[in-house]
Image (cartoon, rainbow, N blue to C red; front, side, top):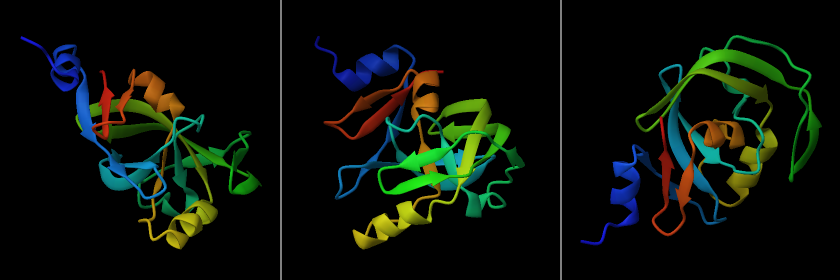
Length: 147
């Protein structure tokens, strides 16, 4: 009997998360930080997982100054903050000691607004994708993470 990708990855211990594909071919995923729901862009090119500084209270993030600088394709360098030891849940996958970079993401949400795409609370970056041994199924719009 032939196994499909989904069945095989689940049998290998991966959990599956549905992704929403935007008109710009970006993916958005629902996640929880400190048990608070949020919407995030999945970004394999982002080094770190980030949250909009404006939402630090929403997610109960305690932060300190950071030496990390943030930049994106749409804006120049920004000062950042860092919040350590947070819980992050994506689907059934949980990471209990997650560090999160905070910076002003107005430029990102402005670019999303211009394309009528739902604004996001932050970005799931390569740090988390690596930690979860992530596999992205572009055909089925799914993210697989392994505990």
